[in-house]
Length: 262
Image (cartoon, rainbow, N blue to C red; front, side, top):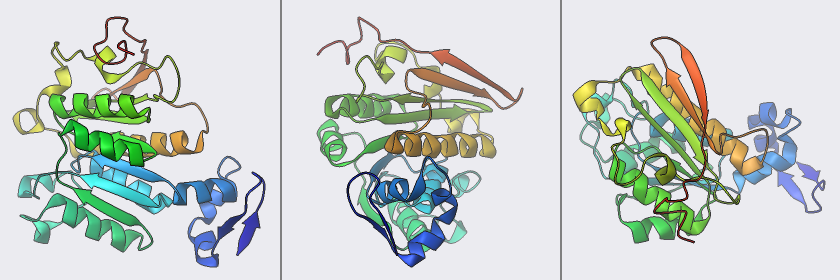
């Protein structure tokens, strides 16, 4: 067992945890104190599809201590091509129940709460008050705006992504920082969001959501540990067909119906 007092408080990791997370601990920006912080962190994941699956898997493997998983849907055979949380025998089961079983097999120390209601604004706000970061891995415009409003009201960091066909995007809206734009600055609730087209209608190449979901997990860890440069105030666009990444700077919209009403 190792004791670390670099931040003025005792930090204890068991021998098993030191072994399990040793490759994290070797990183100067993580170390023992950073791993302990991950173990004490609580992340909300809204949507357990193609994006939420890899995000949840990597966060569980990385040692996030607690997750709240939100999804109302059931596992469908057409999900299995890209939603790596599930397998064939789980078709027809609740996604949240199936995801919890998978994640606890991956890391038995993880605590998991479940909620099927992903669109009720008051419920989302209650969840946001209790967590350290929120991943929006949903697949519809309405839910994305509800999550954005709840995160802004709670001043909690939002890690958002969307994907379709062979393209996608990821962004961070860190409402702990003054002057951060929000999702509604990017896509107004009264505008047309090009990402609201569904995979059911347009298709999706499986690894695309894997890449973007892993990016969400990465940005979440950076946000929680306050390390590196995050995508706050930026939109990262991915074109898998041309293997092209492009970054766009985002600014607060003075007329935004969410973050301009303070």
